[in-house]
Image (cartoon, rainbow over all chains, first blue to last red; front, side, top):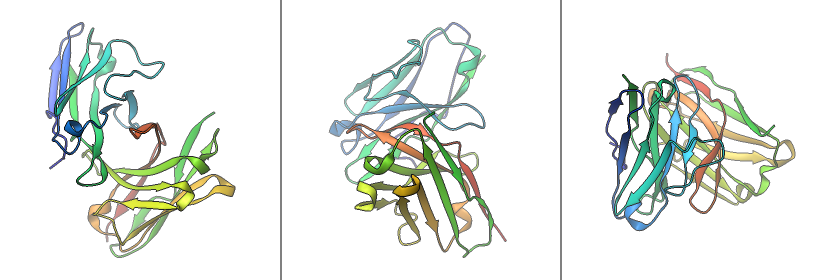
Length: 111
Length: 119
């Protein structure tokens, strides 16, 4: 069981908007630690999408956005494209475990 | 070009040992925080180990504590992971990664090296 909880899968049609949730607790997201998001295309290493809850590295399209509230965070993808089909992971720090923790991952299918 | 390249993976029997390497180029990591993250086949990401201050501080996931050792050779800009007493559940792709900021996000990843523990 992952410390951060994500839905196993989400799907959407091209052009639509999807959101992926990441639920934590008072020892990680709720404690104020930043939430980061990664995209992993099949057979490749993860790639940073969002850091510090809502900051996009250069080169990441503005179709990707992040938000955080309380003990949860969300990744939103607008204008869904076929190349967005991938696994998405959230990550934070947990003070009880004194460890970096990941969500279990969400597989995005573009219909 | 800034990149990380892992090597050293392979097939090893349960109870055996393996040493992974991660060569960094395009930057000097002696002052950076470097980490290992693994991904079992078909599974999610798991943080394994971290090294701060060129070895001044090291941290390990409970699942590998006492069996794995992280280290660096700053003269060669290389990160290592010595893995002993390997178990079947250690089978995974091992990524080395560089984290940034006080929030410790993984901003640079290697391509990974596969470790298979099987008889």
